[in-house]
Image 1 (cartoon, one colour):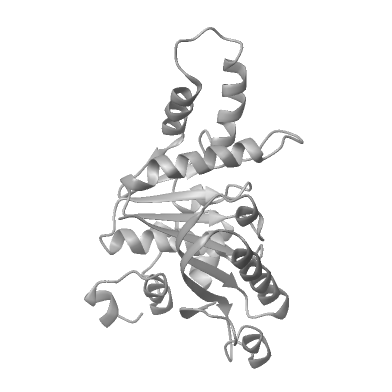
Image 2 (cartoon, rainbow, N blue to C red):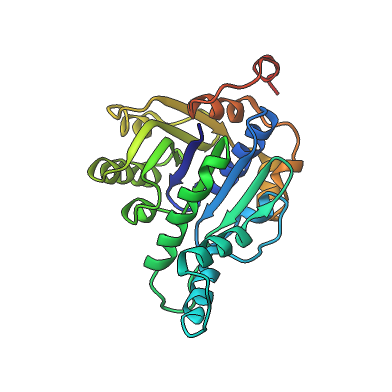
Length: 259
């Protein structure tokens, strides 16, 4: 059974970097194949996975609209399925699907419908699906994912960042989104850790797990230069704990090694 992990939180908290790290950890863990989904219109996941940006889900929109004026024996649904397959980038142990962005002021409704359809078709072929969502709550309000194995809410150890986490939790509770696990992931933690005032903001929230990921100079450089996280040095213990926070076991060897 495929596990769907949704990475969400305020913009700039490091969601995409953590999504790339999680894909790497899943592959190293033997949980493969993995489907990585870049559902952020900024489309920054590909380079962090060592891949070039290729046709996206939003590109399908224009192609399908143009096909309406063409005489064809292929039904619209079959054409969509074919085009979705063409958007998949294949790699060793994982595939990547990128949502992209519409041209100009175009509505995202159709693009979101395509992404929802793509996930429903593809997820059964993968042991794990990692979705890097856009900043904020839009992915929930548009119902891109209606069954989530784990929602990893990424927050910097700041009040403004944790308030976004609270808003996302409030929205997820009001929508018919089935979430098995919720994990709070404190990212870019330095010095004395998460301030008490910040931690108290979510003290009464029903999180199944909590992870603190320190500021990592090596990873920060890779992200700034858009280089592959897959080629980074061994990830620290906190990143490995992210697997467990998402309800995924990790190898005994990685539990013993604490870089």
